[in-house]
Amino acid sequence: MRQVILTAVLALAIIGYRFWGMDQATALWLQYNFSYWTVLAALGWFMWSLKCEADFRFLSIRSFLRGHSVGILIVVACGVFLQIQEPHMLKVLQDEPTHLATSLLIHKQRAVATPAEAHIFDGELIYLHAVPEVRMFLFSTLLSMVHDVSGYRVENVFILNAFLSTLVLALLYVCGNMFAGRNGGCLAVVLMAGVPLLSQVATSGSYDLLNLVLLLGLFISTRHYLLSPAVGGLNLMLSVGVLLALSRYESILYLLIPIGAMLYKWRGEKAVSFTRSAMLSPLAVWPCFTANFIMLSNDGFTLSSYREKGAGFFGLQYFAENARQAVYYLFNFDLDSTNSVLLSTLGLLGLVALWVTWSVRFRRAGAISFETKLLTVVSIFIFVMYLFVLTNFWGRPTQSSATRFILPLYAIMSLAAVWLVRNSSKQKKVTLVSLAAAGLFMMTFTNSSNVRASTTIHMSLPISYKWFLEYARKHDDGRTLYVADSSLYMLVYGYPSIPTSGLNTKLSSAVLCLKAGMYDEILIMDIRYRDGFWELYKWAWCSAIFPWAI
Amino acid sequence: MVSGNYTNGLGAPLSSRGQYEVVAEREFAYSQDVRILRLLPRLPKQGDFGADHSPELREKFKSNEERSLYNFNLLP
Image (cartoon, rainbow over all chains, first blue to last red; front, side):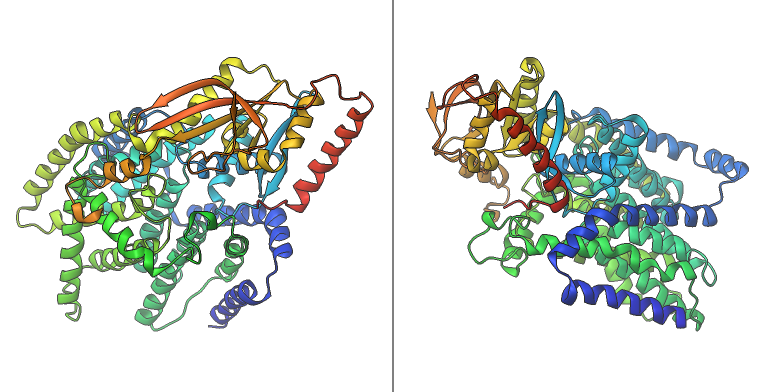
């Protein structure tokens, strides 16, 4: 009990420091110098916990492979399917180039920050103007490790995400297998692989797949902890929770799941059991608080110029419109969209059935299986988290750079769909029919949607940047400075670049660079939208299917 | 040749102080055009800048690099 109290005091002290003691200079200093090492320690803790809990003996691996050969084959096949559907490119600007630029600085200096500009000086590319990284940087840290092994190159991010996307499918298989056996696992995988959004993200430089891997990992490790006696599985569950908190802004809230699991278990066992290493777990999440402080202290990071005057970063006024767009997105039949109507329908039915079952049988002992209880709690949590995301001014799922926030909801929907099928009267038959339907859906609608993705409105911006990059690759002789709104795009590909805003404020410096002979020319990428673009954009998303969504 | 001072969609408007020429242009569907512009220096060309000033400029860049990396120049 003493250990738990000490841990709680430590956690409260860190939270208190964030809200009442932190200042900008200290937050920047801590993040720049120490957060990489903290994330590294958290990764080490996770690896050690995994080694202690998992059974890596050769015989057990062999028997697992034998027992699940079909499932493994489907996971690998769907993993390959995700990779061959869309071009590999950076698709969300500014986020994805920022992950790469941060990983570059971590790789070079073991410091967490993002270089904002690059110049060629004496024939060498020098990175300038390091700005704090306000996105959580576990993904950038993992990426820097890939750079450490193979050397820096942009393509490393696609290799990492190819691995993570297959891991997402593998973990979904494991979760589906818990509820409905091997067929259920296969169904969860095929349903999820049928979401074109997953293919889009799997071939991008996004950090959302890592978040999804850790979310599913938390689900599995929480189950393992609850089924183990005393402290069995505690370190693994907490270390996965800590890594999840370090993977995305809002994911720190998922720590409530392991905390709730501990309280539930202690209540059941009528004893408090804790480990010494778990006592240090609050220390591992301090980078979340410094990043949060830096972000909310600077209007530039919360995109204040994109908001209406006086409107907050979060606000209930955004919810109604965002929620309408979310419903529209989930059930959009247009092949230009990245949703899966099949999964939305089955998943929503599954969630409703799951929650109704739970609420009806809640008080009857033994009426609900352990897995159902866990799925219910986690699904409610993920659903509420998504409602929270919808209160963000950038949370509209029909905005292509914000669509991927819906991935955790889709993942839990695929498990809810498996649960629904599992509880049908003719379970085996319904599972096989659903599996066949999901496969057919994947090969028809998903395939077509993916093929069309690069020609739709949603990808026009990254394709414009790619065109600028291709122009540079064709004509560059090392004597050109590139300017774009997202200068990091060119920077991560090794070209000297500054943002358009930087050119405007330092136009005379840019001219000076030309005069001093640093560059022969300065090229600027200029995107212009013709009159009526935004009206057309809105119309393209909100066509006649749901006229009320306009 | 084109002048700045127009907004380029979501990003920052180009400064009206600069003058630019179009070097490449591509039309996209959905009412979007992308152009690559070259900044035209209105001041004297390369060579007019005194050779004596060059080392200063180099030092300025070097010190700026160190300062910016360790002091965090926040984005506006």
